[in-house]
Length: 207
Image 1 (cartoon, one colour):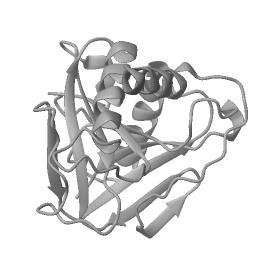
Image 2: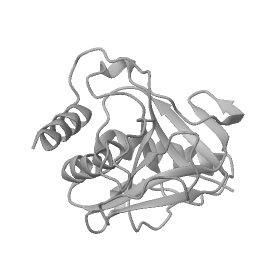
Image 3: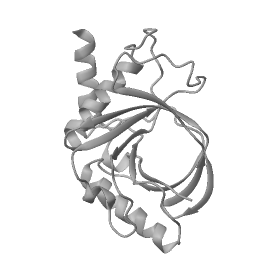
């Protein structure tokens, strides 16, 4: 019961968007910047380990359910009852989308499935991570990827993600760069961070 209350509080804080200053002190994966153009970057990411879950619901519902599920895993709901360090970003995307070159993919969502993932901390391999007790969580080894990124501040919500997705896809088209995935949201700050101090990103895998 206590664990459920803690998870409920954490997910509520993450998705509530409170207007209080937050401190960004959670580790994030290393990457190499290939190029930068204003708020856009091309990055090379090394292989990453992800804990991923699929959730059915609207943006707010799916976010809350997915966060609670993954947070429970890293806080000890695994076969070793081991706590894992929280890392950033928290990744979320609409599932089952066709890639569109000239329109925001998230506006074309059919159905209510969302994919949420936590990046696993350094020091683990796929075969050394504790196994989730929740069968709806899948551990994955993501290969090295080239990623196009839009960096922005402000509130993290579905409208901002759709607007950012359209902006990033349009920039990719202008640069004659082919996207290989649907846009996904990457959140780096707790929701109580003041919107103007938040670091948010939209990411798309590219050739």
